[in-house]
Image: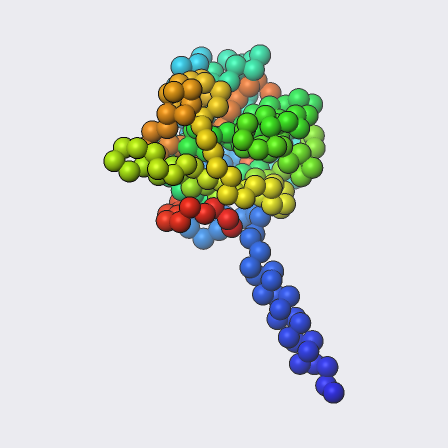
Length: 255
């Protein structure tokens, strides 16, 4: 019997499986319809980002974060460098996109240069996905902060690039009342670590993000907000960040 048809069928099945897999991980280029928001240039930083002038804000424009070398692959990256945040003063010098988003697909890459380096990626300037070397708790690396355990096993470690690939669905409201809580799914360095996680509140108080001071963080408001990156005075760098707006009618965020 000619084995060729069986070989072709097996090949087609393999290709179908790979085609269905989400494209995620370090180095992933923007998907169709996505907007690049960090490319390692000062021009893009100034064009698309601004400080979040929340209750803990201590800096001044222009943004003090620096464009620095990419220590692994050449080129440049964005460093969370603002002395106003020294000592872990979160909210003192965080930056947020000028554009606001509801539902979206996000890709962002980060590298932590020294032990204990701390930053954070805030979805809608509310819900933190932690960036924190050494912390394996529910407050730690890759956690939907205080909502999930840290998927620390997926972290590449100090001095290596890491990637978060995220699908986020914003909270839904009816007649001004919350009827569906926000949801998030995430791949960390190509590994699926969160699936349709319900986010219950803004953690960390008013200095952490929008609505953090409302009813202990549970008083969410029906407003889109920008993507925020946290500065705590540590050498954490970002590159290759892009975002695509979505409209997720169903309460699902799986890729």
